[in-house]
Length: 426
Image 1 (tube, rainbow, N blue to C red):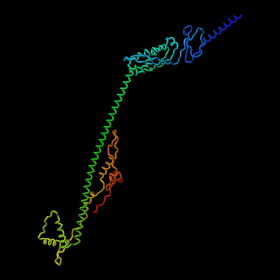
Image 2 (cartoon, helix red, strand yellow):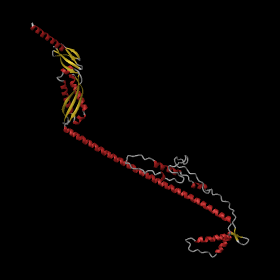
Image 3 (tube, rainbow, N blue to C red):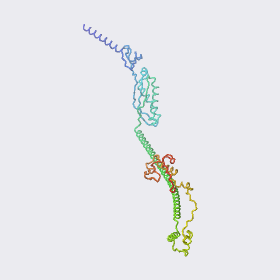
Image 4 (cartoon, rainbow, N blue to C red):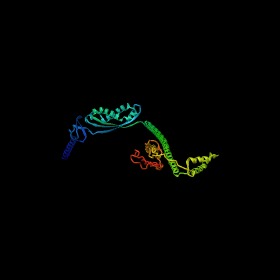
């Protein structure tokens, strides 16, 4: 009886285990972004999507689960020979995605190994037609060629190549040292060229600055010489005009003095005795000349005095000759006004407009700012003299003194005219 119970329990246990195994085999849970390839009796049956999948126990089985997310695969460095027979090591990174799980599983034994081999062969084909310099500078071109070749080769495997990147290109150490030395030499060469160009530009700028300075110095000397000559000319003209006016005034004064003397003589009515005495007083003065060594008195000196007395005088009632002034029948000499207008300009003290304009231009030229030039810093023109270097002359204010009113000489900022003075004899 006990043996029958044990056998029954064993059978029940086996049946329960079989039921559990059957349930486990018939129900599959597939995660998100994955699919399962189901085979029935060794043949492809279907592709189960994410979620709960039911299978026929002991008939259907899951061959492989395929991840549908984008995959990143880094391949080991590949030795590639360039066109100039240099061996470089190239690291690549491939971004791919499975779009047809059935083709990826049944189309190729291992699509990862297939992608690696296609990448290696394509990379050697592309880099073998380039020089080392072209390989280092043409990564974009290599990436495009690799992506195109991989898309064409893996299309039938149900794989889509999204991107192919060259992670690194490592030439041999000896080539790296040579490239570093070459780059260092190129940098030093460019530095020397730039230094030479800078020195050349500096020399040119300095020469241009010296040229401008010499030109400005020459212009300044020219203007100074012109202004000096013009000032000397004007000063000589003004001195000549002043001397002419002075001589004229002196002649006028002498004429007035002579007129006064003769008028006084006529008004005094001198006698012949007084005239003879004055004549005798004048004789020693006549003999005082340095050239007069011997002075002879004529023998008929008395006759000369008698004739001189008879000429100037008339006999009186007592027989003595006395001075008798001749009747002054000449009309009064009119005032010399005929040439008043002719000589009036000699005595004018009004500033010449031409002189005022020349002075104004000289002051403006002296105060004009010199434009800066790219040359060494040294003074191009001497600094302006202080204000007291131009003392005000008679009738002319200093350069920065009060200016004449508008309409004085027609130019604002110039000294105004002086009031014309009357001649002293008017």
